[in-house]
Structure formats: C-alpha cells, structure tokens
Image (cartoon, rainbow, N blue to C red; front, side, top):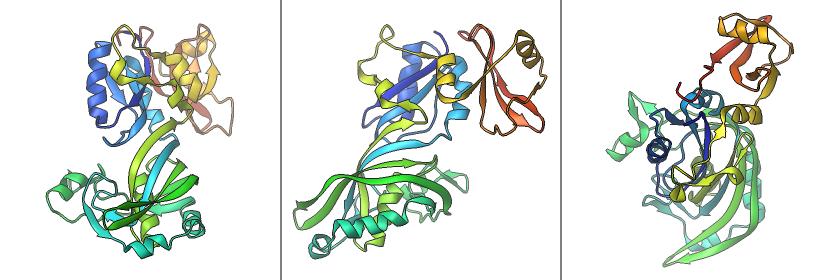
Length: 304
C-alpha cells in the first residue's frame, strides 16, 4: 500500500479511533493515524495518514478548519451537545423573546481572537486523566481558557422555534471558520450563556481542514480495499504547503542532515521540499539563516 492521505467523510456514531482501526484493515498496514479528532456525534472530514504520510500529519493538525453546525438556544447540557441530559432549561417566554439581532450582537463578540474555555468533556488531560473521564466519574472539572481565533461565525438560513413538550428552543444553522483547537460546542455554550437562555450543539459537520475539502472525501461505510483511494503523499503535501523544488545536490544534502540556504527570508510556515522527479524529500522550516529539515522521507515510501 502506497503512502498518502485518505480523506474520509466520517459518519455519526464512529469515533476517530474507529476510523483508524477500519483503515488499518482496508490499507493492510498498522501505520495509520489521523490529524485531529471528531466527536462521535459529528460527521465530516477526517484526514487519515497511511505509511510515511503519518509523518505529514504533524504539520496538518494545526491547520484552520471549517464546520457547519446547528445550535440550539434554550438549554444547557453536561456535554454542551445533545448527547447528554439538560442542566438547565430556559422558560419558553425567554426563548420566544430572542431575536436575530440579539443573537448577531453576541456572535460578533465571539468572532476574531478570543479566549475560550474548552468543554469540560474534552480530551484535554487534567492531572493525567482525560477531562471527559473525570466528568463521567462525577468529578467537577474546570479547564483554563486558551486563545483561539474565529475567522467566521455566520448564521445560515432562517432561525426556527422548536416546540418539544413543555420546552421551546431557538435553533439556527451556522458556518464557522476557526483556528485549530476551537471547540464548537463551547461556542454554542458561550452564546447561550451570553443570552441567558443556555445553548448547546445538536449537529456538527467538518467540511474543511486547511485546503482539504469534504468534496474530496470518501464514504467510509462503502469502502473496500479495492475502492480505497489514497491521495499520494506528494500531492497531499503540495496541495497544502508551499513547495521548494530541490536540485539533485539539495536532495543529497538533506538526506545527509545538512541545511540549505533560505530562499525566502520571510518564510515561516513549513515547506514541502520536492526533488526533480516529484518525490517528497522533506518538510523544511527556516532556522536562522538556513532551511532545515523537520522530517526527511525515505525513497521507498510504500514500505517505510
């Protein structure tokens, strides 16, 4: 099996670990990993690295992401999504009094660079244990805020009032472009808190990671070893990163641990170093006045 990325449209109910386990069977290799988890409830784009491309995942985890979400105002939940019971429910009158203008005013405060407290059921470790495990065992978890950037948080379509027994909810769809590390559940929670009615997520779909789109993704449930499509590692790297074409001597020097001259003094992001035959040789970064390799790839990427 060759090295590269498999772009998967993860179905609801699957964990990211489930997807990796499935791809190991399909690809016939243990060398499989993913670039950023998706909650079981969520659907959408998951980047899976196969063989040498697992080394590429390190550079993809931090890329910006795009999500489509459905946010429900009118109740708080333990997990900040629909997968757990209500903590509190707003009165129907308070929910019916909400207006699009009020929602937009709070959305504006959640755009740009913000400090976000992750959901208490996140995978962040607290005293050596995952936060979600501590919450499920009955412990109170308070996580520290962290900086994230919300590039876009936009309402899509018309909001709708939903009557559910004695409760009334205000639902709307949104698209969010954000930096890595953003918790969309936390955005729903904070929006509801600012409006004094509570809020949580009822649907989430990831549609982009960096330059990779859900349009490139394969349906996991229909995949077989014969239909599995892998984006070759060279194409995967050049789709996302700036490219530096190497001379024959450059490629030799990198494989011997040497540094290259810098081509762009202002370059800070990782660069894909490609030789004259189109092979991915290394990922480079600027270090002082030189370009050094962050990782070097073997010639035989199928078995590496």
